[in-house]
Image (cartoon, rainbow, N blue to C red; front, side, top):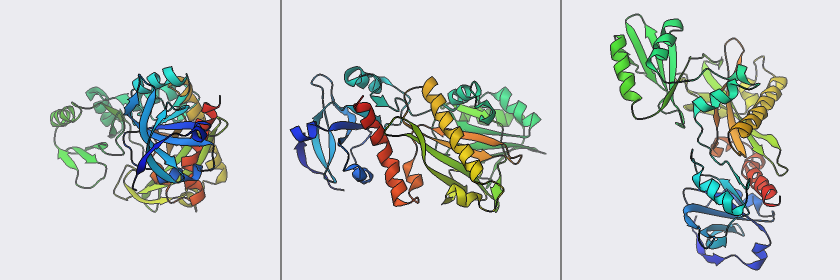
Length: 348
């Protein structure tokens, strides 16, 4: 999408709330066009565009369905779209525009931190035991359960996820899929391999849970939880990611379905889906209370073969493209809801 010429914020626009999108790029985002009737100016900017001394920001602005280069005053509220575990910039913005005016203060979550929050809450029974990677924990899991799952502590989008299985003549190490496993024939070789792997990045380790499959495809259930224009948490959309038969991570997507379609023909009904939504909202409330100011998360669930519901992961910067196959109305709502919440904050 081409950008239009430089534009100044006019007095008419100044009567609208300026909603800032703190981003890592200045690429136009057409999906915010559904906000055209809201009393807001949507302004996308990078941290390099902030003039802290003069309290102005250079970026791009959505104007009559077109993105134009512009310079504006500081926003009235900011929706953090940078994938980061640092609150330096967001806290500095809040020191100028007001406390609580920036949401998703941090959104790159540490899986071990999230686990510790959940295990000390009313959702402890949904939390998969998660430990910082250590050799002794790996060996104990392999001894007692025969398998272990190792993941990057932060982010990953399913990359760098290993399943290690104890077999008769050693250990199988699988990356994302069961295809072409690396075979090591001794404990010492396994330890050396894992030490090299985990040397430059933090990893966590979990017991491997064999989730319920449909037609031999593992699937997860993702709930998108967002704050609305009154500051209340709601589930805006849901999706089920059906993975390839050879995969043990749901990010390796074979198809996308609505949760209802994914569960069709199983014993899990509407009551079960409603229950998952309630758990998702409770997870959002708990994380916001104990972590930082949040405006949206996605919660991924899996169903164990014993029918136990597990929280696989909570994402602080949900991939909205996952929901593209939803109706146009739902997809637009996914983008519009955080802007409605930002407007709510701006008017406080």
